[in-house]
Image (cartoon, rainbow, N blue to C red):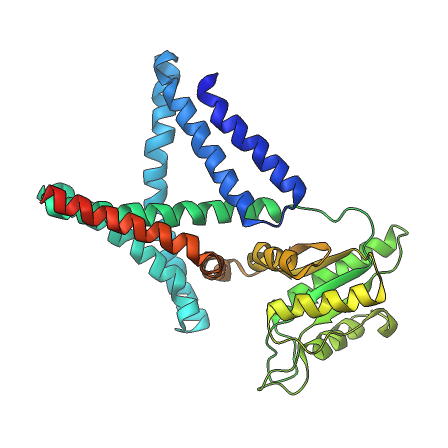
Length: 336
């Protein structure tokens, strides 16, 4: 059982960290480290397993991830083509395509290295693969924990339902992406009232952009009122320009009106975990729930969210990547 002690210790640490605050990126990394430790523990015991169990275990640990990488690359390229066709060629819309091509590039480099037998190329390949492996590990941690975080339910009554704004169309119209958030917020509002709880205040949050006729919060409030929500149950935060301001200004309104408030924040599902991390920093007393997003839009949006989280921790991440690149250079020089 000693082989599984690291995994057990990491799992306990993960549980304590989640209990302290589930809105931390640290939780995602601990989840990934727990699974890696568990896999290493299983591999260390493989010689003691019957052949009928050992072979499938080895295949699961080595073969399935390899096939999964190829399948993921194909999916990302296909999704990238769909994104470009439906949304245009902006950098944000190209992310899934670029990620898929990047995976194929790393796989191609590894194949060329094996076939050439070049020691110098092997060092360079090791440098690229180690860096890609580190970034991939963090991305998988982010993806897995974001999925788990998205499964949370609202427990008990809340005082406010905050809905984060996004750009309007035609200067004053709610687009489908934003309407999804508003429908989710309205569902929470209606469910709490239906079970006999106190009536929560709906708090749409978003200021007026330079290309908009009205504040996002005003357009959101008009949408909610048109859908049957009484106007007195809606309060606006209409000064924010960024997600951070959405959260901090909304927190100030809630704390100033209802000390000790509880709230839930609504955004789209791909944005929920990152918004939760920002909510923690802003001192918002509540969790973040995600509303549905078009399936084809989700991969690129999720990659964009991960890139933002990666850069929010750029000190550590760039230091690790730099160290891995330096190690690759050393290996190249030694082999050469």
